Amino acid sequence: DIQMTQSPSTLSASVGDRVTITCRASQSISRWLAWYQQKPGKAPKLLIYKASSLQSGVPSRFSGSGSGTEFTLTISSLQPDDFATYYCQQYNSYPYTFGQGTKLEIK
Amino acid sequence: QVQLQESGPGLVKPSQTLSLTCTVSGGSISSGDYYWSWIRQPPGKGLEWIGYIHYSGSTYYNPSLKSRVTISVDTSKKQFSLKLSSVTAADTAVYYCARALDIVATDIWGQGTMVTVSS
Image (cartoon, rainbow over all chains, first blue to last red; front, side, top):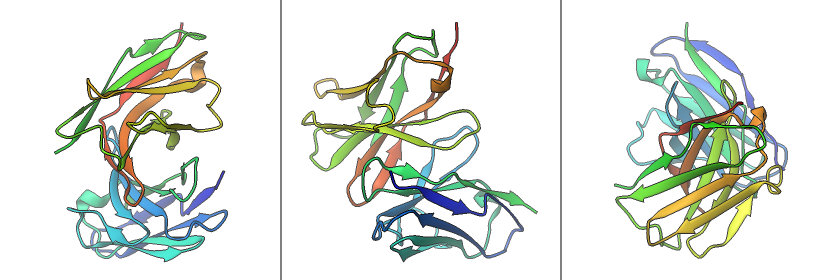
């Protein structure tokens, strides 16, 4: 299985900050990487697919980059609604695997 | 728009079989583009991909669960189902059904259903 490792596990930031979350794959996954946002008690929501494509309806302050084994999710200016847990997922090969999550907290 | 809804018992006894159904509304279950998936999340933990079924009946299961998992589809009812046998407390989780595509990953999720394994 491909292992996905996110860093940091927890991130404290303020409204208006620019934040970056990193996801590393244990082997190359080309650009088959998705990012999800999950709020407590809710299902994950797809933000980014194919490493950098913004899902329809997702604000443009979210962006993704990377290829191969290293990827980033950037939020350009944090809004109150963005405080949540973020997961990366590789869908290059089965079984699909997720990172352990990054909890974005209010500083 | 397409919506998914899980249904099934919220409590299952150890060693028994967990059975859940996902109903698809607002769209077709029979499109060749989609892979109808199950994903779970133990309380306070991360996400684990269980497996998928295509409307044609082809399946893929996570090897970590393969010996205990069966996913089936009923296109006439627009439903797909999960069976997980010989459950233990480790199978306690929120179970999500979801729609996946090759290019876009998993774009639509059900709200999730909590299943507790306990006697």
